[in-house]
Image (tube, rainbow, N blue to C red; front, side, top):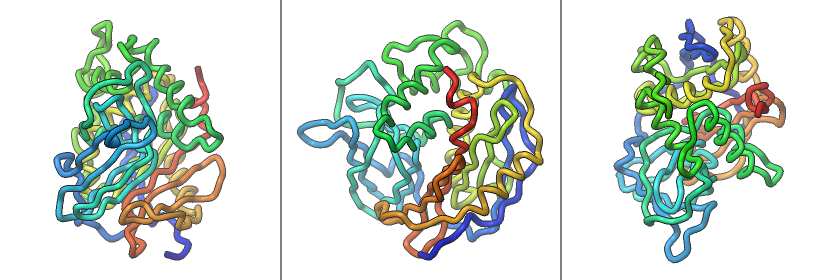
Length: 302
């Protein structure tokens, strides 16, 4: 694969939810529909014999490639983790994947995990990109920020905080998530393959998936994760032009092949305040890209 950029993007009218604004994104690229997302086809387990915090074994039981995303939650086992980087599992392939803990207070349990296509919020996904040896501590710090606003959890668990958003109530019984923000649609718009999330009036991330069907599979999880981040933001709208400018800027960044990622190829953008990573097929077709504004003021707040 030669140096590439993101496909040409088109940004629609946003949906507002307090300090969060979500903008639908369409992309000028071929649709890829040979990808399995259904959680039933990917088995997630601890390493045999001696579980390791930073590694899990992923096995695709289907006859088609299975796409797994950076920041996807892998829940259960000895503790809940998130996937460090995109991975494309070939048909009936098994890989040892790098993961990061999102549950500080537990190191016990069974050998198998659940894969529900749930996603970590933006602040946690930014933490996964730390390259100074402090990735785990930064992820824990970001997860801990939800305890004061949504209420404590038994094990400082990101999964339990997402459960509150999904259920519509925080620890005190106050409405959260879609219970407060029903104007965000239950499914993406026709042809939509991506989303821009803005927090506190500024674009924070841009995410592109390979087809409208794959985006639809992850849609509820992406929205719940964004609504979780909204609890730490202040109430400010984001202008549509700012979202479009962000898309143009991200689209102009060169993307280089970095290393193999199972059956796919990891791609990465240049170092800078906008960090872009993703994955392509062996032929160079874009399967996923996530651009995050690592200097967004929200990520650094205590």
